[in-house]
Image (cartoon, rainbow over all chains, first blue to last red; front, side, top):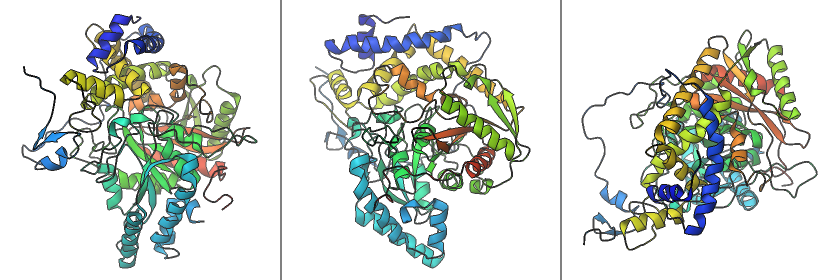
Length: 95
Length: 495
């Protein structure tokens, strides 16, 4: 499969990476080079093979249903690039 | 020479009070002061007063007889582990000013064992790379030079390139690394040190900045195989905060080194004899086989038929997980922010400015293989092939105890080489990626120099949770190889 410019633009939009128009073509070529190489997987027969999720060395466990963390609002907010009082800030999203 | 010791030797020297933890730490701070401009192995060096205060506390514990297994040992920490109150960048502009309010489990375990942190070591941005050239803080440089060519700067490997350069050059007794597809083992081989990627689940991933969560695993980078065992003991252990953490007991790994390897069965995977593999790599591999035979091992030919799909599968699964993990860098909650009139605009501007080229490309690739219409063809297919790769290892391990392979298909290359074609760069990890896909432990041991005077490593791959046999075989190889070479740039050279 090979990428066209429109698909490259769409992926960049989905990934929320603001590529300039003049960066799109170079990106498309780079990704296409990798995809061409990846396409060799098509020759592997995976009929009846289950997908491997994680490395399956441990089974997932349940933990006790109780609060183990929290009360660290100020420490977390201190990591934010911009805050207002006890809140994160974003551009206005409601007109 | 305090900067030339192994962890084991330094621990013994401290216990016998031959030198103090303060002297040991000071010697390393001095070495960093002299060499870091040339090697750029550390992104952040901790303030001298803080390092010496940790060392003094270690000295007090030795005096009180309460010293831990890593007590007073000065080490580097890959700048991917969150360290409380110490800037943690992942070598990205995105996190250039990020100071975590918490400590990763692995570094907390090391601190509890008494280790003294010197600083945060350089890496490829978000651990994505094989040459440490993708760092927003500039590349780390390999302290080794080609014979007769001191001018050409070589890569230290990646992504844990700052850690491998620091340990090789005497700027830390050891360092932590993380390995997603070879990021501990390949730089260890390029810099002539030991690197161990434990079984997936052995070390907690909590507080380690995530790249590809089903593959990421922390491990030690050291000067000896016994050191790797010792340091893993301190790093490993169950952690309720990581759902994939293993609750198996942590053995006394260092005791596995020096155990007889007589009668152990060593598999040689036919598929790793790739066409075009350089003669010097083949020769080193043959030498390793001969050494293990002489130590009493039985060498057996095995087949891992899906080896050639390891790398391609990796470059679907790792970018997919990366695109998901790195979605958190939104310019709102932490890290860099670039303002724009709309919320989507903030995301797009922040992520375009904060991520370097390779990271961007991997996020885009991951987004593509997970997107509607392509998920089955790429991602689901890759997960199924991953099952086949894991089965290859399980089948092989029915007949052998470990596998022996080269760690990398070449010695360290020059900065600027292999840069135009990403696929060419990815091929450096061809021998390390399959063990990552299967989640099995693997160790790189330096075994000799090539004609250009650069170190080469051999890789030992073991069964899930059988690091001990891997370390025993590694110890046997180390003893036979007697690798004592040091690089041209070293704390002990010309000082």
